[in-house]
Amino acid sequence: MSLAGVEHAGTAPPRAVERRRHHPVLRYAARRVAAGVLTLAVLSLLVFAATSVLPGDAASAILGKQAHGPQLQHLRAEMGLNHSIARQYGDWVGGLLHGNLGNSAAGYAAGGQVTVWSQISGKLANSAILALLAFLPIIAVSLLLGVVTALRATGWLDHVVSTLTLIPAALPEFVLGAVLLAVFFTWLNVLPPVSLIPPGANPLDYPSELVLPVLTLVGVSTGYAIRMIRAGMLDSLLSESVTMARLNGIRERRVVVRYAARNALAPSVQVFALIAQYLIGGILIVEYLYNYPGIGKELVDAVAIHDNLEVQSVTMLLATIYVAITIAADVVVMLLVPKLRTGGR
Amino acid sequence: MILSRRRIAPLSNVGAWIGAVVLVMVVVIALVGPWLAPHSPDQPIAAPFTPPGSGHPLGTDFLGRDVLSRLLWGGRSVLLFAGAATTIAYAVGLAVGLLAGYSRSWIDPALMRSVDILLAFPALVFILLLAAALGTGIWSVLLATAVIQVPGIARIIRTATLEQSVRGFVEVAVLRGETTPSILRREILPNIAGPISADIGLRFTWSVILIASVNFLGLGLQPPAADWGVMVSENRGGLNLNPYAMLAPALILGALTVAINLVSDSLARRYR
Picture 1 (cartoon, one colour):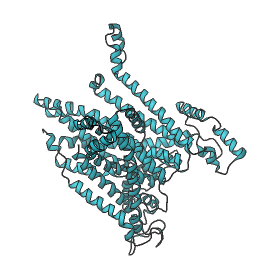
Picture 2 (cartoon, each protein chain N blue to C red):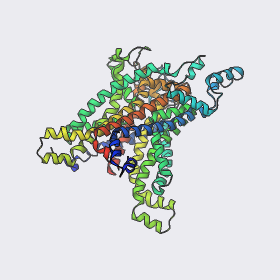
Picture 3 (cartoon, each protein chain N blue to C red):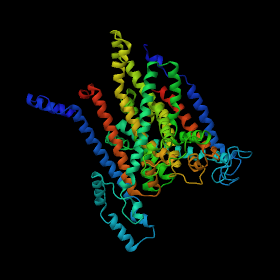
Picture 4 (cartoon, chains in turn orange, brown):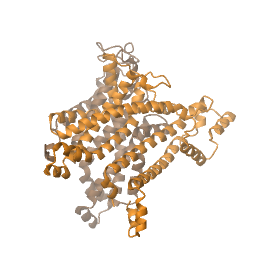
């Protein structure tokens, strides 16, 4: 933005009119997307190097170390491993850009071509449902408790919540999950220990299978979210604009809603973006723990059987979602806080 | 209600003291546990998933081994590998951060870009990726856990160093003709030691959580290793027979991470 400012400084009025056509938020978004694409490009090099270059050859990994001769040659040709490393990388990234995640090594091992997408599309949807079901209560509870404890900071509720939220934030997901399993399966026997959801079925049709995975994700991350929302709201309540509004005799209700809460919105968006990103890592553990048929369990299984072709594409897919969340949050903050659009020169 | 910043000072240090006591207890159990174990951690003593009884107060695991003995053995690997990962990460991060903050040469932008790249990933996915590349096992996990933390550590050290490097006493040292390594060691390091000590605690918690999680996923330490993360994973099948085989290692691991977090949280507040 600073560069653009310099460039247009002192230009004739027609240029200034032309400049208005590009909304500043749009320009900011475009720049962030460009930076995100660059990050992902570098990342793709790293991922490709890690999964394709280091440990020998995917074809011999499938056929076993003693494989040689025509069988190996044939598979190498089929998998495109005869091409140069640069060509392989180009083919892979070119495929990704066209939405083609390539074939899975497990498919080649079974003797055919199985696309990674056909392996993961259903599981991706299952994970999205799980993540969304966890995300909504996290938002609701953390907004409610975060704002209330900020308004009544140092009150009894604040003390209780502040102490209680410190604990789960440092718990590994599988530790909380183990406790929940012991309570709700072993002792109360009200919920199933594993999510037996058949392939292709909608997880929403199996509500009791979803309770524990959702509860685990919510339990581990809500404490952090509450603390962050409280801190943002408190910062806002203690700001000079709020003090000024109070001194102007504006009613407290209006001060809280119009002045304090509005200024706390931007940091809250960032908190929720962090939570959404956390969920991408959290579902790995939770899905494995409860045998939930999602993308996280799929990735863990792919690593376990050394299906590096699938690992590299799934990793890039998750990284893309991750980066997209960051960019989306930054743009939303930009929309919410007009000051940022002109600031930073 | 009008609040002043002073009134919202952190709560009492009760949490930190409880954390410290629990932390010492868990560390002592982890370190001297193997000598206290009543049975071998590898030999079956009863039928699989026998509920608690005399001679085996926490029952037996999926192979009939004594859960208490495995619990007493299983803390060493947790502390050892998390400690090693944190040490490696800090050794590299400290060197890079000091240089980037003090010299402000090409290292600085390189550091910032690498932070950007590694932040485009969930840490766990990065570890899985490295496990896929180098082969699963504790050594890949150890390396990945260290690598993923280096940029974050380096950035914190860089910021702290930057703050100190413009101070008068640093300028005086430069004018005295001291060498860069000696300035970093004698002028800057002692002044950033406080905030670092709090950060080390948080990083160690993070290392424990990451390594235990990967062990739980079955991609790190392999059975028959007695390790708290591995134990939780391998005893999932016995929930209705002997839940303590899964619950006990989970609880002690949770106590460890929460305790370190309580202690380093209070340390961090002191230096903020």
